[in-house]
Length: 195
Image (cartoon, rainbow, N blue to C red; front, side):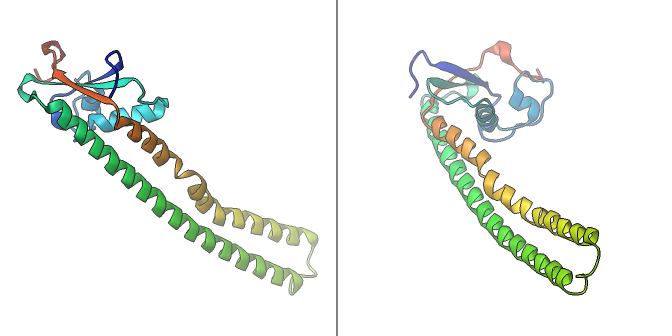
């Protein structure tokens, strides 16, 4: 849990449900999750990922209307956040695993196609086009290089870089599980439109 003098991240919600479910888009609200119509917790995770901050010494303060307060709401929300974070981590791991498998299949297919094209061009250059000008032969060789890069670029890109965003999100989600959670009544002055 976070220490008593932890930095507070305040989420002002119209309903506890808005923590995990997207509220209606409300451009008149002062709260980003209301304006964007996104779940407050996922927006917070994305902000943490973008900023590169960790959860050390941070506490999530959730302000809800008085009608939604309950004696054990802090613990219920904390457990729900932990379960949510674990589910998102598992989902991200599965997404990365599937992306890697697809990238490897694409890479193998790309290498096979590139080798076939290279073989065909070699056959042409050593056979029917052996006595053509050097310019045409250089052009064909250059086209093979370009085609090879095009065939291999997307699978290599997926294999090398697609895991980074889910990995960064998983680091934030892992820290989120230990962040302190405090639930308190939303001040009346913080009401959102419609009044």
